[in-house]
Amino acid sequence: MSFDPTTLELFVRIAALGAFAKAGREFGLSPTAATQRIKGLESELGVQVFNRTTRAVSLTPDGETFLGHAERILTDIEDARSDLAGGVQNIKGELRVTGPASFGRLYITPAIAEFLETYPDVRVRLDLNDNVVDIVEQGYDVALRIGALASSTLVASKISDNPRVLVAAPSYLEKRGTPTQPQDLTVHNCIVLRDTRSWQLRDPAGDIHDVRIGGTFVTNHGDAITEAAVAGVGIGLKTLRDVRQHLADGDLEEVLRDFVIEPEWNLWAVRPPSEVVPARVRVFIDFLEQKFKVLEA
Image (cartoon, rainbow, N blue to C red; front, top):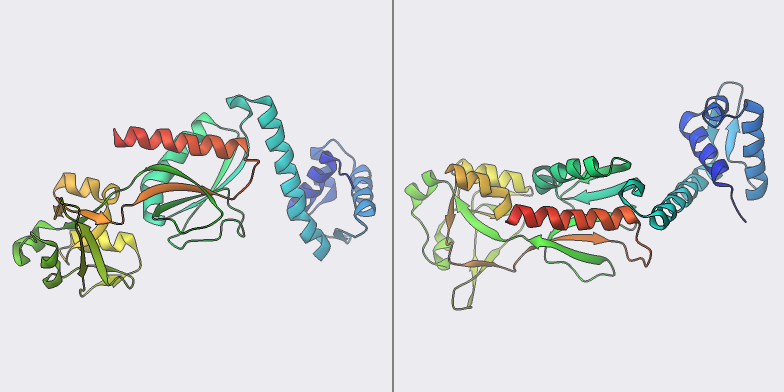
């Protein structure tokens, strides 16, 4: 079974617009010609893809199913053309990206703005969510993930280091004192992410200290940890990028700076396993690697 790309594009536009005549005009087709194209597609598929009435056009259940396939076929054709043609001017299509919320707002959104200036024919759909999503099932091209990666079949590219630090407001440290050893944390008010029970710190000699922590504030959101720490609630564990400006402004101070938080975290770009990687995905990951090298300099 073969499909004419123009007919597939017409089918997708009719589905989006809900009208044969309006979609047909975009392709230089009369309503009759557009209808005949879709009838030919339905004949080849052996199913009806649209419900037609005098007032409305809507997808049938089979049409809904086929719409996803048609969009993927058109994307694959667009990717093939881009790969064969080469060059910046041929990088195009939709790029579906997901990443963590606070980090995404601070760093990924500005990076995408620069990316789109260089590649104006790419359309980016960015979903920010602190939950780890199944990128294959949900159709993402790239996921930005922070931390240690779980074993999987996904393909990961390291974008940059992403060290974590312990921070607290000067007002908190004046009131409660400044920890000098990891075990001092046991008597401090630590701002806890979800159900975290302990923090691991590596000393200059390489020894690991597993310190049980607790506090009066538990949250599931990274921004809330930063805001609580700035407000003087307690000691928070954050990535350095998240709090760099607060440290520069004096809102926060680094605690136990001679110790390294374990496990060490990195920023990763993760994509579905595939031997054929769309040009826009390769270019986007390369762009992020270069962007974060500049930020680290």
